[in-house]
Image 1: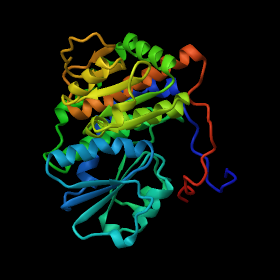
Image 2: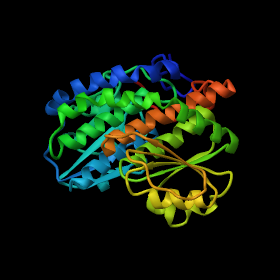
Image 3: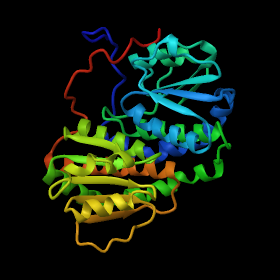
Image 4: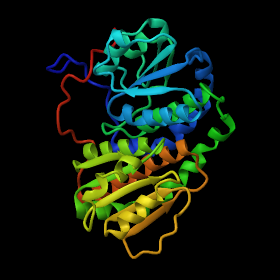
Length: 344
C-alpha cells in the first residue's frame, strides 16, 4: 500500500516496550551470526572508507568511525545528501547504512559509486540499498519500534564488529558475552528514573561524548526528540568545552557518556549548578557540591559502552512515558521524501 508520496509503508512496528525487551535475545543472536556474514560480505580491499548514514544510522556510524580511526584506517562520515559521482575516489570503499534499506539519501549516494566499491549494513532484505550492494551485512529483519530501539542497537553492534573485521579481526569470544554484560544495564532502572525526573523538570537536555560514545549522544538526542517530543541536542566533548557549554547553569540537564576524557567537563558543569548525569565504566572523583550523578557500567569497551548507554537512554524514555502517559511510538510528522519504494 502506498502513501500519498508514493512511498511504501514500513512493515508493522512493534511497540517501544516490545522492541526494547527483545534486545538481549536479538543482540545475542547477532553476535553469533555476524562474524560469518562479515567473512562472506565485508572486504578488506580498500585504504579508506566513506560511510553514508542519516538519522539513527548516522548516529550509530560513530561506533564504526571511532573503531576504524583508532586503528589507523581513514574513515569519513557523511549523510549522503550532497554526495555526487565527482567525489568518488580510487582505493575507497563506500558503505551505506539504512535500517529500512530505503533511505533516499543512501540510495542516491550509493548509486553514484561504482558497484564494486559498494557495501551496506541493512535490516530489511530485499530493499533498494541491499539490491545496490552485493556485499551487504544483513541484520536479519529485526522487528523494531517506530522510534528505533533494537534496530539502532543492532546496527551499532554490527558496525562495532565491522570495525574489528576490517582491522584487527573480530573478538568473537568477547562479543559472545556481550548479552550478559548488557543485562547489567537494565538493572539500573532507579538511575534511569532519576534522569527522567530531571528531564521532566527541565524540559530539555544536552548529550555529550566523544569517540564511539558520540553514537550514544547523537542517537540519544534523536531518541528524546522522537520519543518524547523533547528538545535535545548532541555535541562532541571538545566542541562543548570550546563554548557550547556556556548556556549551562541551574535548571539545565546534561547527559554525558564518559570514555575517560569527560571528567573535566562534568565537574565544571556541576560546579556551575547544572544537573549532570555521567555514564561510564569507572566513577570520577568529585568533591564539589553540584548536582553530579554517576551511573557506572564497568567492564565495557568503548563500543560496548556506547551501545549500553543507548539502552540506558531507552529506559529513560520508558520512565518519562510512564510518568506522562505518552506513547513513544505515536507519530508526530508524516515522513515525506525520506524513503524510496521497496525492491520489487
